[in-house]
Image 1 (cartoon, rainbow, N blue to C red):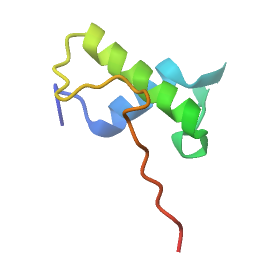
Image 2: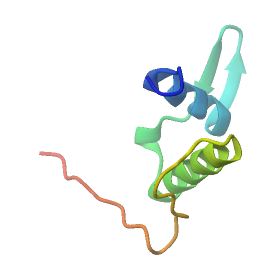
Image 3: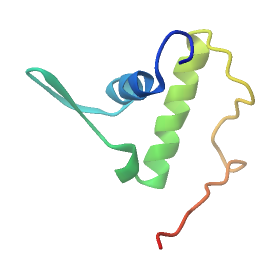
Length: 77
């Protein structure tokens, strides 16, 4: 738990805030991070970081996603 919020709750909150597709009675339909393209995921992470900074969350080692960030690709076995 960080800042009084569980990681699962924060993950869902950020998906609703930045990956919302539709709202139906009683539920939010969001884009799954596992199905996002590399560029879409990079944009999602950037939005989350920018939101955190705007809320005063102390994010250590913040970097803007750009050419200096490399994505690690893990092959399925």
